[in-house]
Length: 152
Image 1 (tube, helix red, strand yellow):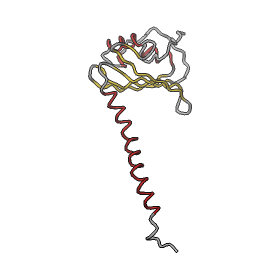
Image 2: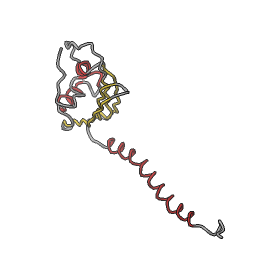
Image 3: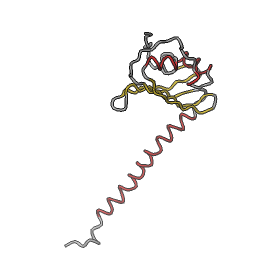
């Protein structure tokens, strides 16, 4: 017959597993902080851009890191950096295409820009009715692929 005080094997196993589990949890918590610190250390003007097509039930999200010293990150990076430079990094102040006529079709597109411009933080998010409206109001900033939005 074994006495519960003399059988310590399960306690030893727990003592071995706990430090490993704690180290794993600490490493998982440090990863997002390290990623944020690495983005903050980027020199020059940069924005993490995301474009989400669809609503909350079904969506397609794409993203890229737009760097502007030199321009890189998506197909129209040079144009996007130029537009942002003229607006002082303010996405809402990017020159609009006021002559564009967009269809009255609801196909929501949510954009987000987070980063730094001229040393200041940028955090912009907006949902547009469709890609045409997004392109007309933000120009090349969120053009993450080669596709141009056709004019109607």
